[in-house]
Length: 152
Image 1: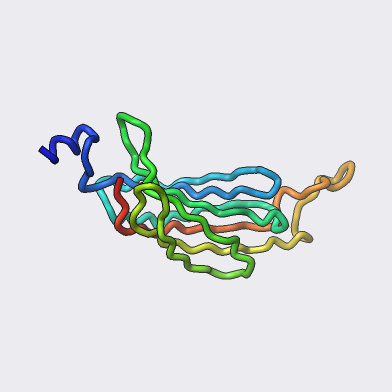
Image 2: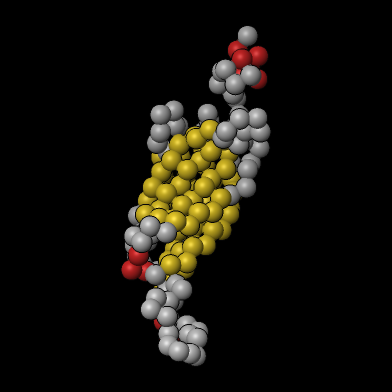
């Protein structure tokens, strides 16, 4: 029966246990990654999770989001991925992204905002001189809001 096959991972389950992983890849090759919590047995998860990334604005990162299905017995399954451009202007930028991938379906809603940091406000070590590169010059906030129709 189909229901029995789904139990053993052989068919299409009627629900997923989705979570999102947001990755920022900087020009320098540095990768920053954050994830939301798992929402159990949902095809339309709501996370409302605030994720913060710190980097120099000149790094112009690539922003990627992958939605995965949490599995307790085997590796987590990808439900799809999407990427979106770096928000150059201050303020909230809403995005609705269709998930892509071999068996992807559904879409993701999120907002992203970048707040440049005032370089004059940075705390430099008093000796011997300021570092060649500051720790960060801005903060990117991504709020993974929700997804609809995600399933493995």
